[in-house]
Length: 117
Image 1 (cartoon, rainbow, N blue to C red):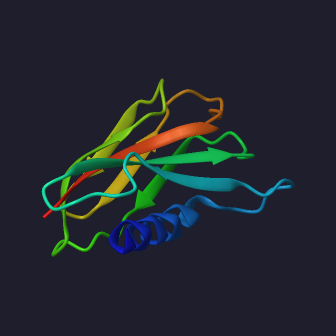
Image 2 (spheres, rainbow, N blue to C red):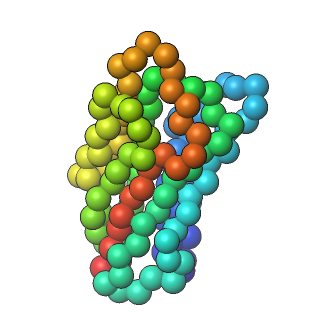
């Protein structure tokens, strides 16, 4: 449980890189699919956002203790993007939209799948 909590804190710090000055404060939330993982278990961390202004692109940077967790995959949940990438080695995720209008990204935005070693 402590490992999952530490991971959530790292993810929460990572998503704060998206925050800029807005009238309403954006709210980030990380949800773990299983709060009591054991060695060998695979679980997901879903990053959600609310009260966020529409944007054309963004990035996330994750910190994961690789002695404890193996990164299985990462997936943007934002639709209608031109580019949606995840680098499992650098633990970076980027997305961009080519249309000229900013996109509403409120809701679930990213899913990170991990396995406890």
